[in-house]
Image 1 (cartoon, rainbow, N blue to C red):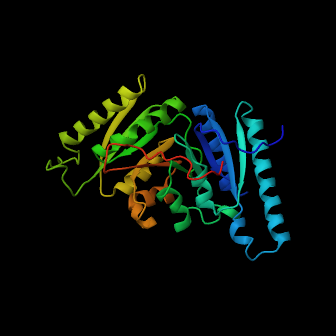
Image 2 (tube, rainbow, N blue to C red):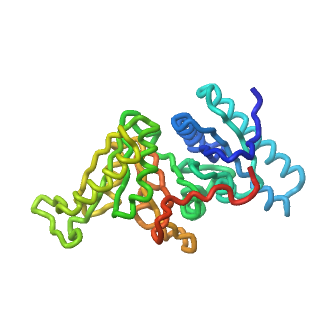
Image 3 (cartoon, helix red, strand yellow):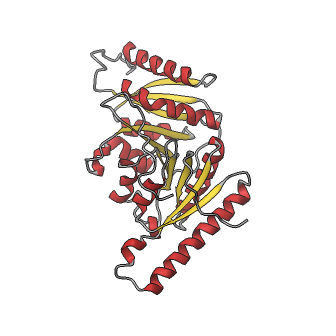
Amino acid sequence: MPTRPSDAAQEPRTVVGVDGSEHARAAVLWGAADASAHRRSLLLVHAADLDRLDRFASFETSEHLRDAGNSLLTTAAEEIRERFPELDVAVKLSRRKPVPALHASARPGSSIVVGSRGSGGFGPLLLGSTGLEVVVGSPAPVVVVRGGAGREDAPVTAAVRDVHDARWLVRAGREAQARERALRLVNVHSLLARFDGTARDANGRAGDRGEELMAELASRVRESAPGLTVETEVVAARSAASALVEASGHAGLLVMGSHERRSVSVLGLGHVVHALLHHSRCPVQIVPYRRDDESGVVEEGLRDDEG
């Protein structure tokens, strides 16, 4: 079956960055399984950066990069069709740089998937600030595939901080439902701090108000996802980042919200998100949301007319 270009329809889809590296291949396979679980289409994107290269590179160089990109996309699409014959697969060779190419491909309800390392068109992803910009400015949740595909029988784990997380936890519930797994809500508090004025006991357990918060959030998720098994855990640790990295070893997918900081540098993501992106033992999904209103998860969709 020939590879078809992406269309202009607005249904949600899983968008994956392709660059020929083994990390990108892992992201493609994970993204295909994600699209199949959610019963939506898969879009494979290669960023050739031709808008910049055409200014100083020769015509032959540009054509070579275009042909190489199309070859990468065709090979990736053929492998996915062999493994997931029922999946609707589309490809896009973008003239843009990697970050705007991926962002422009997102639609409301979509996810963007990238590997933890790359080469070629996606070389900087998650090795430096360029990759982190995918998360910071994304109009859709971003999944970083690292630590393997995650245990098939493991729950989807959501890292909960406060009541604002109710705005994106519904999304985490949908991820768990699509994979037919339980959802585990994990809340980490410092051993050296108090929780809303409630001290910990000698064993380091959080006070009752922490349990009440988790119970309330779990109830909201269950209302939005009937039949979903929702578990809660309040963990006392010296470092939230290290506790969540440890939790990732027992998860199929780790989900965490990150409220909008579009005018702030990539360092504005916070040290916990940074730690998970670089050290998680399973794929990590970062869900953008707004804290200043009740609109919930950021779902902007396409930013221009690029299909």
